[in-house]
Length: 333
Image (cartoon, rainbow, N blue to C red; front, side):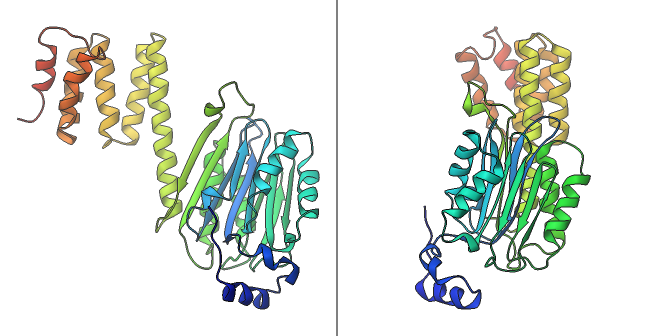
């Protein structure tokens, strides 16, 4: 997917922002004016990228990460190839600085690029081209780099760095705090539109589909960072539900109920959580405890009542005489 600027706009950019004429052919790539962070969690080894922009679907082009390898943010007049090529170079043993320098040396559009790398050892490298649109700049710290271009003020990289360093908790929440700090001092001069948050494991597994432990994107929203924060919290609630399922599989009923209850407390209006909590109770012979949860679910969304007989039919609820009627009886009449 590639978005091109009209020729007149390209010409205006060449004049207004002193973009080298030799790079004119590179201009029609995406002018993604953005603030982002790439980081490694020193405790867990997780790697990630978080980004916000006044540009549609920023998550489809800026953030790149691979478990056990590193993370890349490529922005400003984006050359998306910095993502996969940078990861490949780090996978092959190059340091972030070596990988970034090699790609920049081969890029005639380097002065309109803004790129940051972090690897699995926490080494970082960043580049802000001389022709990136002000306010533009980057800061590198221990295990992270923050970068921004076309910002309302020059404060953005500094406040992002401080927020990341001062926030405690998982990597995703710390990177989100950096985005929130950027927005508090004005963020993108044009406003807000999309955001993304990507976190991968410290080491690659034999199941690559499970190596992305957080992968959230807001494509188009009036408050993308607030929505990203909501989705991250919802993601954590679903993690609790999954932990509850694992506890049930291990026969740890008390721990499972604690996990389910914690998820429901985070999102009390989520009928999905309540329904499957009830189903788990029934399948473990605790129907009396399940009935109030079924009743609550059916009040929130009566369509769940249609699902109960289907679960019995396919063996996901016990086919005990009278059980289905007993469950449905607590629903709205």
